[in-house]
Image 1 (spheres, rainbow, N blue to C red):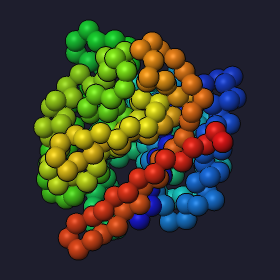
Image 2 (cartoon, rainbow, N blue to C red; image 1 turned 90 degrees about the vertical axis):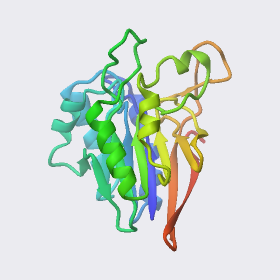
Image 3 (cartoon, one colour; image 1 turned 180 degrees about the horizontal axis):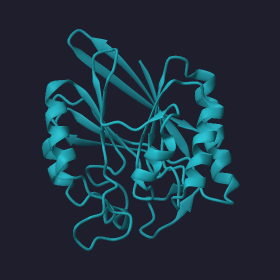
Image 4 (spheres, rainbow, N blue to C red; image 1 turned 90 degrees about the horizontal axis):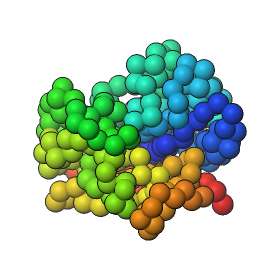
Length: 247
């Protein structure tokens, strides 16, 4: 089974470059994506409005024919607005999906506002979503899909805008979880969450972050992720690769 991940598109009115980058990413997927699943992992737009979400939806539906497309919200998104605009399109907003291969996708919403005074860009996972994550990740080997990384990655300023209750999220993830995939960092990372479970962070399609720089700096490195999943007896093997889109 093949899965593509597109993250942090940050579409906004008047920003033709962000739209063009997204189109290029989708064109690559369309050329190679027969039978694949497409995950849209948050910060799909920069400043939420119905018009911008409609523009995003139009780009997706025009440039890829994949039937299974799932979206989650990021800190820049408006979850309810996004869900309403995507209704009746091929872009689905769900809590979980059982895949034909036998494993499960669990979609965790980290776009909730923190309860404490954290910097803009931070998020929180609701108690309800924590309970569902705990329940579903124990039932079936799963891939957890969440916008914010569940463990710290990147430069110091970036670690300050993570999930407020990330320790609770990690505790809720069962040990037979296959992988955690996220966005938010505008750069690729692969780091351990707990024994046997890796967190894979997808680059952005809009612009990258230079995590070697202690100060905020945008860079031109952008891309998407590809995941190949194979069933091996009673277990699953997940292999990931980065696909640059600015070459």
